[in-house]
Amino acid sequence: MALLQLHHLTLHSLPFTPKLHHSRFSTRKSLRFSFSASASTTMAKQVLVPVANGTEPMEAVITIDVLRRSGAEVTVASVQKELRVDACHGVKIVADALVGDCKDTGFDLIALPGGMPGATNFKDCAVLESVVKKQAADGRLYAAVCASPAVALGSWGLLKGLKATCYPSFMEQLSSCATAVESIVQQDGKVVTSRGPGTTMEFSVALVEQLYDKEKADEVSGPLLLRPNHGDEYKVIELNPMEWKCNNIPQILVPIADGSEEMEAVMIIDILRRAKANVVVASVGDNLEILASRKVKLVADMLLDEAAKLSYDLIVLPGGLGGAQAFANSDKLVNMLKKQAESNKPYGAICASPALVLEPHGLLKGKKATAFPAMCNKLSDQSFIDNRVVVDGNLITSRGPGTSMEFALGIVEKFFGRPKALELAKVMLFVH
Image 1 (cartoon, rainbow, N blue to C red):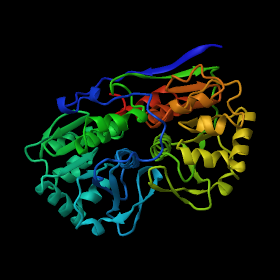
Image 2 (cartoon, helix red, strand yellow; image 1 turned 135 degrees about the vertical axis):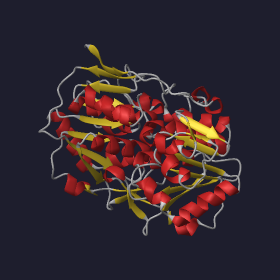
Image 3 (cartoon, one colour; image 1 turned 45 degrees about the vertical axis):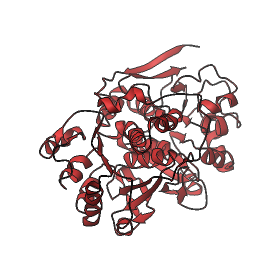
Image 4 (spheres, helix red, strand yellow; image 1 turned 30 degrees about the vertical axis):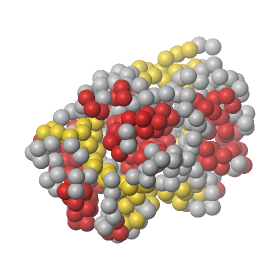
């Protein structure tokens, strides 16, 4: 069996501030497998994450998910008139509260995701402006990523005299209201800023360290499977290479269910839609709205019964323990996957799903695959489990939240080619 290496994307690390140097974030692989938020020995920290129409969903969901893993109580607050927001790339998120309901609550941290026009909607929200200004005046932590440092925090005068970073195309605007630097994550006093989707996991782990301590940040970052260094090149291992065919635009099904890992689901959906694939998000359940593993509420495009009437160039499963179990128990979805495999059409899974869905239904027979480390003992063939992304003919598998971007980019490479994947990786600041 030939082993081919499918493209190396070379990265160059941007400097961390010394206090937030990336080596402080552990990538231990031996931590126990857990899909419930870790308990805190002290009173839970209170965190506000606002969302808006036009928010970058990867940045919002990664921030929420990682902070909830730390044991923080995260309130997702809509700055719109209703709880549901239409984030970028057609991702629909349902908030926990309206921002007006949160104005009298004290928070240990307020963290703003980016995205446009989401950052502008933040800037124009008088209630959010007053809440964040009070946070700063009280000497409490506040943070922002991507466009929001410049568009929101900078416009509100909350970065004066401070070092900050943001998405590259907003650096000029940032330089008029802060000392603009090109760090992946920048902390100055009580403000933490970062650059884009590809730096949000590091940003979120840094926020955990600021809220708690290094030990808590290490505990949370281990199961995420972050790249050891943001500057490392990543690789997709490909065996038995074959062309993944489609008629002009790939038709891709992404099922979601209660208990699906929201970071994995959203990164897959977001990145494939950035590549201009036609992505159908289907709920494996009775309702369009699902409650993901870290309690983020996502809204599917349709129910699986309706989605099953269509044909797909790829069916790809996010992980999450509860979601994977729901997938495995769905006769309709399992039959779709079996038909896909029998037709030699592409299918894939990440995290718990290769072990809990594909393996028990015979969909890994004769295939090399990987999965979440603590689930790999369920795979009958474990010879390639240490790879972050594995393609074997019409199958693609991967390990966890921290490998989701590589996983999605691997799919983009198979359908659109390496240049397109590399272009997207640069736009997201996943590669330099």
